[in-house]
Image 1: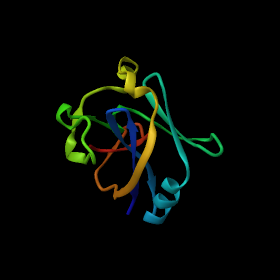
Image 2: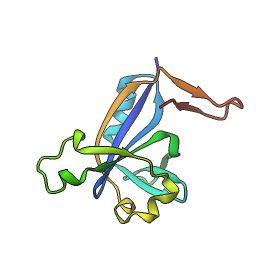
Image 3: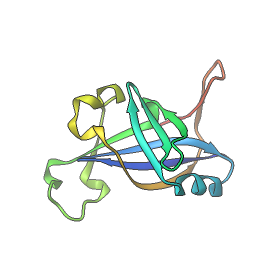
Length: 130
């Protein structure tokens, strides 16, 4: 079975859930997500790098990003929970239009079985279906 990592990033009033990597075991995912990570944007891609070495670990495109925005009714609420967010459709290329979507803080990681995959017909990539 293959596993994918899910990393969660906070950017102001937004959360980003990134689906990245395909791993042979849950232990490999845990090792991957345990390292210090850094996220940046380059045009229409997000770049996931090792915060220690600066090595690019993965480039992430729109289909593998879920953007959540804090509901107006939850602003100032403590603690904030996931149900205080709504999924919004903001492509990576439009992040520059949102002041909050410029700097990202890694706030959590998880894993899930990669059971539903879309395979590029030219076999250039395998992307988790969402």
